[in-house]
Image (cartoon, rainbow, N blue to C red; front, side, top):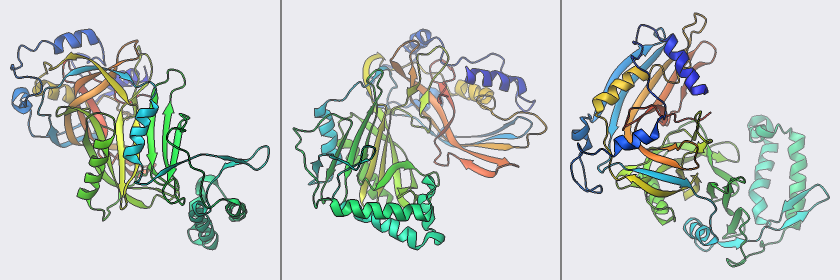
Length: 463
């Protein structure tokens, strides 16, 4: 409801820089009619669905797309200088269901693909300190990096050492106390952690394994307690680090991109998840001891059907008035550093079901452009025309992608993968209050998503 309210207000406030749409565009409405329209393929040539097609020619789409629009009193500028990306195969419509539960056999397949060679599973034993305090049994070597970090931080407390403990507001005395406690725990620790066989592993949500007893690799499964749907499967190569926490600053680094990409693709091909295609990549840092200084490449993969793939964006979920509940988007993130794959996060896995259309009747690009021109300045526009608001925004749209988008079916647990155009980029903000800020600088901000079958606006970001 909030999104629809925002859209109505934006339409009212829109200035003379852009005419008000002559007719409203629906938001994920009348799916039955949309599917019926998609199945009317009289205008589509008779190639098989898996044969190569030229959608640029069929839809009249350009290879690049440039234009500039402005609205909201000139304080919102839309700067489009984008590559137009189309698949080389037909786009289907497919019903999908959340994956409910994961078998031990399948999780072992994940483990075999993810864990370092020679890794042995570790039995997580709990050590009781007192009635209120427990900890997991670790080896002596496992404590070494933590002890070294605390020792260095204490010695250099006023020269950057305190920054490692900002998140928990620790004082120097607090860290000194924790160091003493950690040294006691290390003195009581065994040289090797207890092992557990594959047959003895329990489906308790997480497994850990080690090669050298100094580090632990972790595989974690999170499920929704209400319906059993798998929320995510996560892997961390070294439990001392946190490579799946995204640090917002993008930095240049000297990691070889081709080698990193090859490592990510090779790993994804080994996972028991079906066909996925690389969708986006960018250099960043990951959370090493909380300071975010480990350079890495991040690779996002989307499910693929031939050359058609699910469009990956920064949006995590969608939810609309009249639909059952929030639905997370399936996406696969692989983090690669100088030592190889450091982490994997697989969000909201789903199971593909009935194919409602193997190929779809798509609107021409000229019509998509018309809808874009009418809606980009009003949809999800948080600026207003008040004289006190001096904020300026620029939408930098760098990529226009025709792919598949998962939308929830009305009053159902299932969703539909439908063809849609997504306009992606980042936002430049100039505010008298916050200064100059760039958001979503990885270029995956979905400014507008248009259903390629009926022209409706798809709400990509649930609130």
